[in-house]
Image (tube, rainbow, N blue to C red; front, side):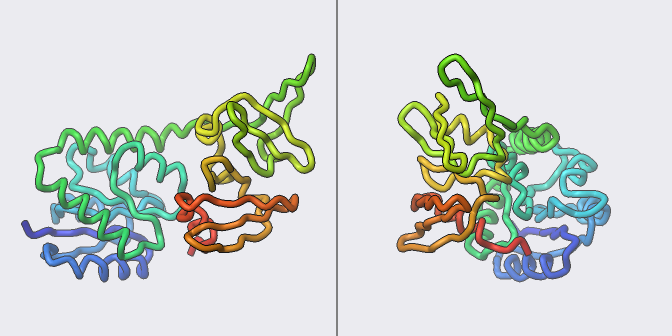
Length: 255
C-alpha cells in the first residue's frame, strides 16, 4: 500500500525536517504540506491523505480544531506533533494516539510512523475514532492540580503551598516533603502524589524522587544515563536510569 502523507505545521523548518524524515520511507508515494489549520482541513478534504502529521500548536486553528472540523470518525491516520506540552502528551498516552515531541528524532519518528502505518492495515476505524475523542476530551478537561498540602501534626494542621516544596521523597507508606530546611510527612503513595501535581512544575526523576523544576540550580550528567540534580536549597537528588529521558528533555532548550 502506497501512502499519501500530509504535513501540517506553521513552521517552515519543522515541515522541512518532517519531509526529510518521511522521504526516506519507501512506502510514501506523495507528500503535501499545509501551513496552518485551515489549509490542513482543506487538504484533508481535497487530497484525502492516508496519514497526517499534525502540529498541535498552530495559531488560530490548532491541531485539535482540525480534528473537530473534519470529525474524529472521518480523520485519516494521525501522528500529532507537539512541543513540550505535558497535558497534551499525557492525553496522547492515555488515548494510545501516536505523537512526536519536537525536536523530532529519526528514531522516534520511525517508531511512530511504523505504529501509525501498521494501523492502516487493519479495519480499526471505530477504535481510532474512540481514541481520538478520548484524547480531545482529556485536552478540553485537564485535571485539577494540587495547590497546597494539609500537614497534620498532633492537634494542629499546617498548610504548605505546593510551590514551596523543593522536592519529594518516598518514605515507605508516606512521602517526605522537603521545604527548605523543614521536612513534612504525608500519608500518600508516590504514584498518587505524582498524578496530582502540575507536570509543568514537578518532574519524577526516580521511583523515589520528584523534584520542583523551578528549584533546580544545576545538573551533573553521570554514567549509564543517570544524573545528579542540585536544587537551590543545596540538596542533591539522584535520578534513576529509567527516568533519564525525562531529565534529558528537561535539559533541552524548547526551540
